Image (cartoon, rainbow, N blue to C red):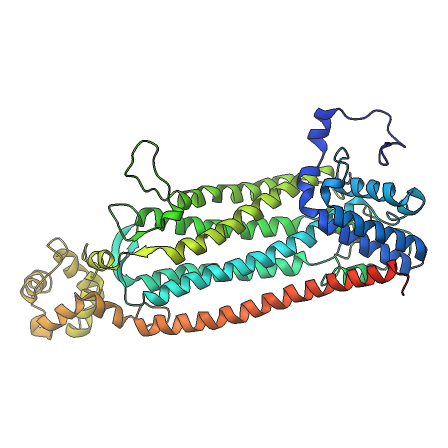
Length: 493
Ligand code: ARG
């Protein structure tokens, strides 16, 4: 069969080695569906503009419906990309006199950019859904653990008592910003480059607004050079996904540490564990470790995308083809990691007793004791910090007499004479009392955490609604496209 792309200008064909090097067919499987949509919208617009005849349009659309039904496998994989292979199949089906008219006023340059935006907007919507599910999982676990004491850490050293709910909400809040970033990226992804052709647009009287509408885009990438050359939408998405993977990696690291014998804070469901081929007793948190490791894939994809785009002159350069598989790698890795983390959190067992026991070891209540001295005895915080620091050299459970003795050496007087009592010290050393006092906005006090959980649950509902609206809008547009295409096939206007 004659090669519809090369038969004119070129006389020799690339060997298998060159083809493997230059072809994008493997990564193009991601955009097969999108390519058919783009072809349909472009064809309909060509007819509406009087650029192709109605009966040609009808035959082309019929061919495209068949190609869509037969799937990517029916295409000739020896072509260098999906666009030309799809066009060649169309020509096989309807003949060149008809099929050969589809590519009027178009280039693979605007075509591929449009396809990628169509596929990526779907991926970003799914990712947003998955992120809301993960946040719901974290928030549910938090709701079950509002009173579950645990030591909070700085420098991975016991720092102050907190609750597991407070800790989990920190992760869900970070992921809420990630969701907003995905949504923000979506608004820039969902723009149509179609009609830019190779880069200089075309002398055909195209209606770019019409294809934009038919494909459900929110607007145009107007400048035709910018439209075919820019991959900032991929870079931006990959950057957001790299950040999501960093957040998941941090969570995964905690899961690994908390599952250790030394911590024993949690136990993962066996589903997420693996064992050793030699040590029969092992239960390893492999899934969490892989999540930590796969953050490297997302970071690597971002670096690759940035490097590919760096220093490219306007407008289209074939280097850009190499961006595509990296974008997909980042999407696949990130979306699956978010889904897996959701289940891992939902099914993990919390060893609340161990956490509670550990919540005060390492004198985690020292800050509250110093604060109590400030409030009860009216001494400056810095002085209280010194007194408690000296007491911390002991067993972490000082009595009023101990306090007075240290205070005597530093201040020349005991704090009992300034109003500090044994009961106040006992209260300061009680982790539950510590937490109940931290009612500041965003603090771990149970009432404040309950408020925070309720607010986040409301936000999640609103976000889910907004995501479903976007999904509906796109689905609706594409259904409309199919209806318009079907009408053309049937010769209706
Ligand atoms: N496979 C190409 C890509 O992914 C499609 C565009 C080809 N354009 C060209 N001028 N060779 O970028």
